Structures are given as structure tokens and as C-alpha cells.
Image (cartoon, rainbow, N blue to C red; front, side, top):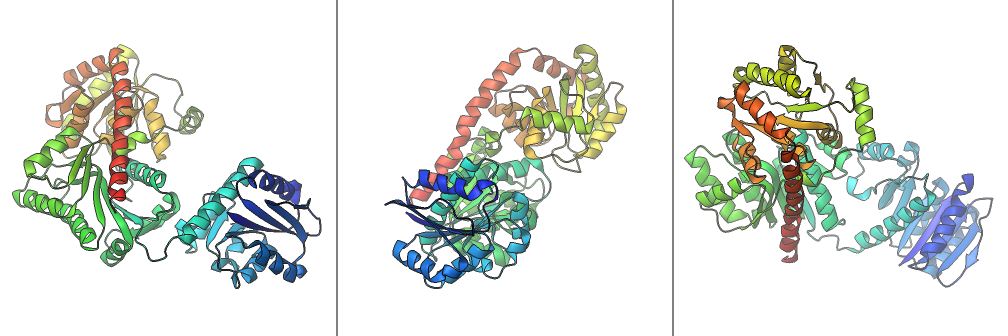
Length: 535
């Protein structure tokens, strides 16, 4: 591959010469021509693989001649002067241009707006670009320019990716569309989405991704993907017509506990995606409960007709599919995609705990609540069990919300009933920090599925208060008997399960099972890869 680098501006702190030296190192793998537009020349070179020339903007004819002789596969430009030069070269040379942007003012440059790909100097600048309407899929991730070796290598990687993407057929169906219960402030659902996006990018980084979500602008900024609003069906259909694969999930979307309306919506997306010519996959999902016979029949009929591949996050969901008579899709047992995510570094967790006024290194009992109907009937029993755990083991309750802010209210109510010290995480945290906070506990008592899933993934023993089959399904999947139904919660039962979890033996079992599930989770992306290879 041939890369033409045009660099404008002065050589502050020797940055240009360093990038030139890195170009020399990378010229073993590709041919590189570097044109430096400044009064202070860089070290020139002329070999079979590397050509370096110092010129000024007035030397445009010579630049055009060099470009014509070099015949690059991609243009890389940095600096306003370089933007003008590359914009002129572009009129005579149909190759992609990668523009390095360092200020918001450069985003408004009319010549820059016609370029194909962008390398922002910071994530803050990338967000500003997205807010101005630049498509996220043509913005490369920023790199740390304090590490010049890594920065120069990142430039080469971006140029290589740009040349490859630019060469792809413009009208081919190649994208992924992902739809789930996203954009509603639930850390568990967002963890699933983050994991799926990561895995799809590992599978094929050049395929564009579109997320169907309640918060499209937030998704664009956070995941650097295209995003559309959940109920803009016209845009949903357009995205299906351009995509190769529709990913439904993860999470428990095929259920009617939340409402029959949400079930009908997700079934409709399966039908529309198939009608628009997409491969359809239900990814790391849970199934049920489906209480109404009409919903069960509709779900079975739609899934059998429209879905190619299903990966399931627990065995109870597998059994439910069989009872529903769903047998046409290719069905695999996997695990929740969120199992692949890692906690934040301990130093970051320590800092956020200090900010929240929570002492680091204390023995905590994590608590993840959901304001589910009937919770108030169990609150006294939960509070009494937490007080008992503090008296017996010195475990300080730490309330960690999964859905913000709705999980704060039940945490506050139970916190006020306690006689022992306790802490409530009252500020919304990132996914990694939420996992990191739960990883600091000795055990976790959870109503929310992902409070116990995040904890188990970190090797922390868990107790589930089951309000839904998905909680039972997860605990059954990890071969844990530390679960009590919502209606059967008593202080004595909870204290007994806490005793089991802090005994020490259960921690070894949970860590072993977590490693097994992390391996099993890879079945999600393996199944997606196999489906793509059948295109």
C-alpha cells in the first residue's frame, strides 16, 4: 500500500521529525511519501520505500507532480495548509483522504467536510464532530499523542483501514443493526450492548453498526456507531435494507411480563428484518416468561419463520424454546454477552469510592435492588438480614444501582431501616466502575439480574432474590442454590444464604464457573461468524 502524508504547520517539539522517523520504520511494510509544508525543513529521504520532501504551499505544482508519480492509495493530512493542498489533490485523484483534526475550528473548514475519514486528536473533539453531524463510522478512535511511537503507528493503522474501507463496493449490504432495551439508563442492558459492539468489531471492524435505541444521540457519542430512535420505524426499515445482519438482543426481549406491546415490537423487528433481506440472529438472549397463549403462538410462529440463529444465555431459555415448538433456527447455548466485560482498574475504583465517601478496602456486602411490585413486603426482612450479616461478619451493606435513578429509591428505603453502617452509590457510574464496585464486595445480594451477574463474573459469591425467571435461569446456569423467590423472602433464609456465601468455599466455585461462562460466551460471536460466512 502507498500512503501520501501531507503535514502542514510548524514542527512543534519535533513532532514532525518523530512521525517521519516512524514512517521510515513502517516503510518496510508499505511505501510512504511524506510532504512537509513548513519553513523549517525536516530530514529529507529518497529510497525505494520512503520519499520525504520539505516544500511550501506555493510549490503546489511540484506537489501535484510528486503525487502523480507516486500514485498513492490514501492521502493523510494534518494542518490547515495540508487540508487545502489535499482538497486540491482530491479533484484529480480518487483516493480516500484521512484528515487529522486538532481543533473544533477545523471541523467547520469547508474543505475538510468533503474528506472521507477523520482522526480526532481527542475523544472530546470526536464527540464535537458527531454533534455537528459527522457520521461516527468515518471517525477513527483518537490516540495518545504523548506516546509518539504509538501515535505514529496509529496513523498507519488508520490509513490502512481507510484504504480498505474505501475500496469496498459502495452499494453492498454489509452492516449490522442491533436492537434491544437500550437507552433507558439500565447498566445491565448497556453492558450487553457494549459487549455486542466490541465483539462485532472484533469480527469485522469495517462493517458499519447501527443501534436502535431510546437515546440515539447518546449512543452515537458513547459507542461511535450510527443510531436511530426505537420507534422511528421508517428509519428502522431503511437500516434493515442496507444491512447484512440484524442482531436482536441480548437480554430477555421475548417475554410479556413487561408488556405485550414490547413483545409485539421486537417480533415485528424480526419480521421486518427478514423481509428486508437480512440474516437474523437473536444474540445471547433469554426467553420468557410468556404467560399469554396468544403471545406464545405469535412468538413461536415469528421466530420459526424469521430467525436464522439463536444463542441463549441460560438453559431454562433453551427448554422454553423447545416447549414453544421453536426448532427451525440454529440454536446454541452460550452466556450473557456482559460476561466478557472487565471491571475498571482498582485505582479508578478507589478514586470513585473516595469521591463518594466510601472507605476502600472495607468488608462489604453488595446489594442490588429493583423497585419491583411487592418489594415493600420484603424490605423489613432484607434490612434485618443485612444487620445480622454486619453483626456476624462485619459486612457493611453497599447499595449499587443498576438502573439509574430508579434503583436509588428502594436502596434509600432499606438504608433508613438499617442499624448498621451502610453506603448508597447515589451517582450513576460507568459499566466498568459498576462492575469494579461489585468486585470489591465479599458477596452480593441481588434482585437485579446484572447485579449478581457482574458480581459472579468478578468471582464474587451471589444470592439472588428472584422476581423473574431470568434470575432463576442465571443461578441455575452457574449451578448455584443461593436463590430465594420474591414471595418467600425471610430474614432467616437470607441469613442462611449469606452464611453459605461467606464461608469461603463458594468463592472458589464461583470463580471457576465464571471462567467457564466466559469461554461459553464466545459461542455468541462464533455463531455470528458462521452465519456471516454463509452469505
